Image (cartoon, rainbow, N blue to C red; front, top):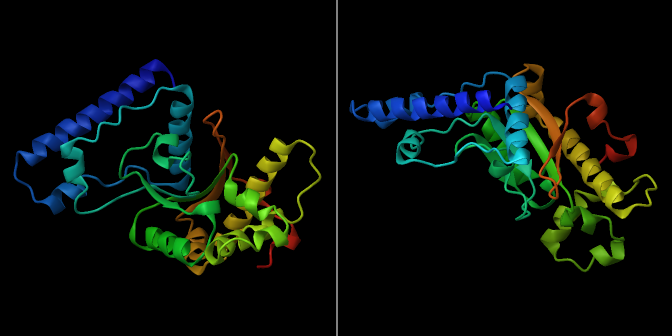
Length: 251
């Protein structure tokens, strides 16, 4: 993003805060104020582009100032209007809002080791689709994911893990069981993480709520890979990007 565009964006944010400030001086109710927070992003394409632009700012070190003012907080008391859902990993090195340079209230973030699709994460995603105005669901893996690495171990080693760690790992194992032969360990790990993202996206699309929203073109479901070392996110959007082998389809 060039300097002029960045200045205009900052100016727009400032004007929005000033307008909210005027509203609070007119004694509107919290519910009326909340209506001012309606999302300006109306399509999945706009949502994806916003995430890409935000990550580009993060990557280049030109983030938007993130001061969470009292005015902005009060505007979000009644409701939330995130434009995107991100199912990401619990890893402490993967701070979702920072990676995409978004403000509080912009993203509906779900974090679980290995970014796996299971009952809890599905319930949160269904809620975001049925009750919030989200336009895209992103399944985001990341460089050096420990859960994926654990799933790549042989079954004997995995059996030493506790019950619920095994529960998570078992949802990743099918993704990494038939990886191509790759000598370079870093490249192999990246391939494993992306394979897991693809499979979780596939699992997510089998959910009826998600499938219905996709059919109505209300949302998009995509994948992403975050490279910790660079800060860049690679987006997996096309059918080709997200295709999986037949051997990965079954549970």
